[in-house]
Length: 592
Image (cartoon, rainbow, N blue to C red; front, side):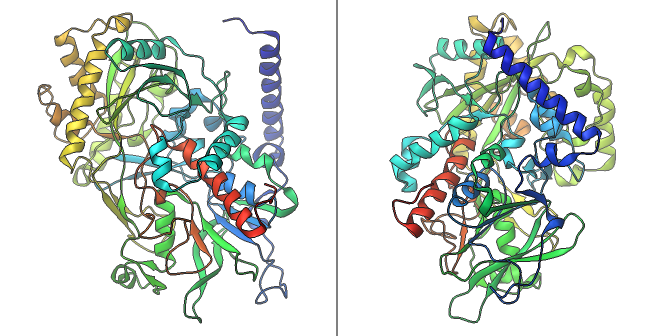
């Protein structure tokens, strides 16, 4: 497709910016590329100069936000318009990270298991390999980019103001969301969904409606990712400080009164040195946790809020006994079918979605296995190029098993990686799990169990979803990629068992048991949520129950994952609550 004059100008300008960034990095001038905004600094630069303002400690802040992710960035940006804000992010920045910034490197970023990676891998006790973000921008820096709003019923059940919700979505969309240009694989999925009855066609839309639609994306037409970190551009630099590589160790409480009240946090910088940051004395000043569905309950536990027995077993001083912290977490199980093609296919992440009345969503990706870096790089056991890998039971996570996988992957022919995936995932899973600490090291992942398919209705919906995928494979609009009769579909099912490279005992020839296929090939799409549920850990205004001056604002408060993909609603929530808190503190006329 030919570029228009304006599009060509944008492309050249974008290229020039990146050339200058790379030159700066080569010269060692990291500040312009890595930090971008004047208020972003490394944690080691934090000054703890004594002040008479509060307990002889450092300069106090109206708000301390823990986690510069999908919710934390828009929340901090909004609050900074009127209040002093300190935003603490344990990871680095996305701005000069090429694996984060370009769609073509999506899988490489996920496969990077180094300590400085933008993603921190973990394996749930179910055996499913997963990732959590460790970078400014959070999940928007490592995800597949699809942008779609929550359903009206989700918004109503959350008790949100619908007018402010719409305004908050629009605030995000105007800054970082784009309309995708469909590649052939995505067009074939769209047309096949409609052919098999996933209708009506709702065109390009952010709204959650039954049928087939094209959603938004945070990737622009040149494949550049625009993360929640770019929302920081709207912040008030006079009242704002962002510290990266700042790992919060615990929340500090004043327990001398009847009710514990948050007064600050203790964090360590990139060199391991500890610092303290404190809230100003005002009763409305708050510590706000936006560390995600794993990080927020994990930090609450480290800070002494959680099940009393569990805390005492780790010698953590109990601030508040709450049995629900870390409980009821859930992950939307996903299963994929790999469709090999007879020619290379253009790379694409999710652009089209089928929202069925069966309680399943159908999406697709293509082309990420055929590049030389995908095949020849040793990505280890978290390799993402052929469906992310998945269920590996703890007892089978041996060194020998990992080496065996690596050897087999290197021997696969290039042609084996040409093709794409059709994804089927469960909406609102009823299977629930829990999170608990393994030790006192905040850098270590906690023990996480999702209990995939423990509820029979989830398993039945997976079967229904795989049957929808089978219909897509046999549809006339998909024949340009693969000619799929019943026998071929069975072969693809068997191939998908292999493609997911599960080290569990497989049922290779049992394609007639779709229930077994679902169990054998379950993976994640990173939509886990819960652990700090509304009504059990936080109030409807996200204030932590039983303590003062502490909130949790992120996906850990959700009972269900909103929409087909949650990032839109999590960013909206950050903006929404920033506006709401500002208005309540300053009055309805507060400018934000």
